Image 1 (spheres, helix red, strand yellow):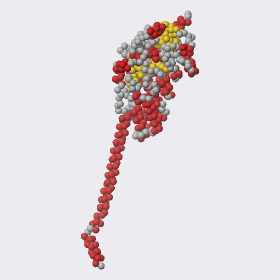
Image 2 (tube, one colour; image 1 turned 90 degrees about the vertical axis):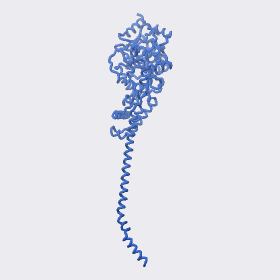
Image 3 (cartoon, helix red, strand yellow; image 1 turned 90 degrees about the horizontal axis):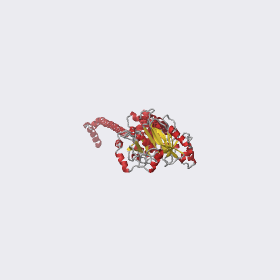
Image 4 (tube, helix red, strand yellow; image 1 turned 180 degrees about the vertical axis):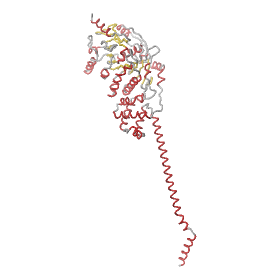
Length: 512
């Protein structure tokens, strides 16, 4: 048996599957594509998470696009983070190209041009379905981790949430939360101290500064109503294809705090909402997180711990997470160890640090008698990748340098008119794009403060009137007393007898 025949057998037997799967390309040996040696990803293990990595321009986005298309065709909804703005073309069919035909002829798969059901979502003021969540939905633990608060500051946040629960104050946006912070150490200080203990102004001041930092990254657009329901990510179109939900993030690359805030809240909401699926034959939802370093580079240790915990647990809900980044070292080891599928495009060794990273990356893949993994990593062409997946029993499939199939949809952005047309057909735009600012903690506390001020003013006025009455009464009593004491004297001095006596005395004096 020749080396090529042995390799073909190695790949086809290692990728054999009884269940449904996605063929993502054909294996390569010594730079030659082995037609029909398909590299397959079983749907059964796609909730085991994955990684798509590689240097800029090596084909990461196209691999993501291929996976999203095939998942949609299998009736599995997808959520994509579109950092560069080039994934909206999924809603339009590929125009085709001779090079695409040539690639698919080598692979042994027919090429089909088609479009997919797409929903455009947004965290900012860009066009699309608005994604929002309330502060109450975050809860004290998640909010404290996002803000990177100390234990003492977390205790303050927990007390504030408890106060709002006890007094039925909805905390919907950051305006509400800031109002509660202020109230706890000012107008409501006595009330808080009596019921929950004293709250330090230094703690509330530190928390307020962290909130302002979050607001500066646009979080005030994210917190509020109408809150997005994660079940709307699970929609299937009339042809049985899963919706591809694309979040436009081209304008928040310089606001990683907002991005990580959204991602963590989304994962937490999915985990708390979705039912347990057990060992299902197919995932319920797949999330692709592009530019994953934006989450991990800015995350505090408590936030990283939260992400790691969710990554470990969320697969039981039938949800798969796929991180897309330039280098696998961008992903923490604790997360990297949870990833079953790895699609590694070419890495470039320009520096000693790059060579070290390539060596570390090679160690993340199964050993192969057909490849020197370190060499292959630096010699892969555009649209080629080292692939290692998990079979239906959870075992790594044979490592394969793979000629990746081309996307069936357009590999480009939508025009403004195409985007407008797509949004005009969206049922979610009408559901979520009207911002609601109903009565919540901000308005209720303001009303409470005004009511207290009015009561205080009334009480003060009442006391002043009572004081004035007392003073007036004293004055009347004093005047009346004086008049009573003077009456006998006045009577004597003004009597006729007294006057005649005085007049007689004066006459005698004058005569003398």
